[in-house]
Amino acid sequence: MSSSPPTLAPTRRAAGPRPRRRGRRTDAWLGVAGVFIVLAGSELLSRTGIVNPDFLPPVTEMYASLFGLLGEADFWESLWLTVRGWAIGLAAAMALGIVVGFVIGSIPFLRAFTNSTIEFLRPIPSVALIPLVVLLFGTQPQSAFLLVLYAAFWQVLVQVLYGVADVDPVARDTARSYRFGPLRVARSVIYPTALPYIMTAFRLAAAVALILEITAELVIGVPGLGRDIGIAQSSGNVPETYALVIVVGLIGVGVNMFARLVERKALWWHPSVRSETP
Amino acid sequence: MQTTSTTGRLRAVLGTAAALSVLVLAACSSDGSDTEASDEMSEPATDSTGDEMMEAVDITVGVIPILDVAPLYLGIQEGFFEEEGLNLTTELAQGGAAIVPGVQSGQFEFGFSNTTSLILAVSNDLGIQAVGPGVSTTGDASADFGGIVTAADSGITGPADLEGKKVAVNTLNNINTSTINKMVEDAGGDPSTITYVELAFPDIVPAVASGDVDAGQVVEPFLTVAAGQDLVNIGSNYAATDPSLMIAEYFTSDDYAAENPDAVAAFQAALQRSFEYATENPDAVRAVLAEYTSMDEATQAAVTLPAWPTEIDSNTVDLLAELAVNDGFLTEVPDLSALK
Image (cartoon, rainbow over all chains, first blue to last red; front, side, top):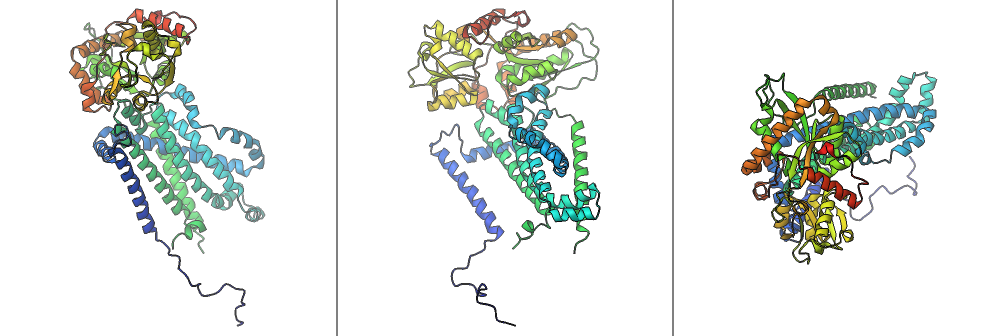
């Protein structure tokens, strides 16, 4: 065996401070500490009167209102309606986005044909469609569904198009030389490449869907937590308004954690997920 | 080598998709309404004259979660609508903008909206008509359910002082701007010098308190909130315009009225009884606020209640139309017979 040439990296670590690898648990505690500092700061601002306490109540009052809400049946019903609206809109957007994305992405003519239409429709904020949707469906849940679908669909479509375009041309050609039918190509060549993009799309669409669901409820009055926020606001009940906003924030955190869990489970084979565990 | 992983994963995804589609189908077929429903009528109801009606009519009323519609909830609670053969459910919307299209499209049978908005709707031929009064001013400029609030040190003591100032209202070119203009003109000021700013009611009190605007027009419960912020109420623009100003009405679509005259008559009768009951039982009104608003008990006890008249005030409709034309957001007075 020849000795290792001097140009190779040294086999011994350089003298100096070793970089400490923080475990995931430490990260979680740091996160909690960060939230705690923000809450304590907000409480101080309110209690000392720097911000008018009638319009920014102390955090303890907000949480007292929150715990009061937990005992009301109406709150749980609104929560269920919001989560249901979010889930249905998200599922429809994912399904539609994946199917349309696969079809458009696989056929170059369609891709070129729809490119400018997609680029035109995508930036339209869903919120701008609220007056249209109100004329069609008023305060029924379908209004919120349409808004959620419109916003989340584009997130999914764009990611799926990227995913389909990312297919390794060698793999695609191999499939062709093995004479795979279009469905088999979709299943074994396009789908594994597109799956990480689909998971990213799921995470983005989940967040966007929640935003639009709450917006529709708040602005139009579709039944749900957003409408409860509007009612609390127009009743002048400031602590309850904040309490409901906190609940919506917690739902957002829950949605994000759920999306990451699904991502880890579906992409357990992907290098990005595999290398995460220390 | 994991050769079965692709198939396993595919099965998992297909299974999830199947589960999701089942969920979607189940949810789409279920009723999404969560309105506060009155008891279901299982036997024929009798109306106020004792005649038996075939069956209870289901009606939905689109309302905003404000103080003004409390008698409707009282009427449901006391059974006045049931006795008239109406199975009434209320649907809360966030603003009048969702209610008028809702009535037109048939999502609601009846709606509640302020008179000026209804005048604008009639002038645009939206096919609606009033069925009854909604709410009126108490007539007392210093003790009304609406008013103009300003900071104690703003130097504004009366409507004439609003000249050249920034005033916050909840909707531009609507009943609040019209009535404030009239109030200022009657006091000898020039309303064209006022700069109106559009803010939602909950945001007007903080804006006045912090000095972002010089004054703001609010209704209860924000008059009470404003008092809590040590703001001064310089008077009610509603009472100053007309002591019996009818600020809002209940309305329906022309189509519904033509096809269901009995239901409309029953609604009007029950509404009248509800208004009378509300006027005689202010404590009951305050108590029912807890059902559809989130007002806390202290606010419920402190708010000034409006007046609920039993008849439509036709003069108000003409007056508000005239003011709208004067202010320039209505080109000409339309045929207002549908609102009287």
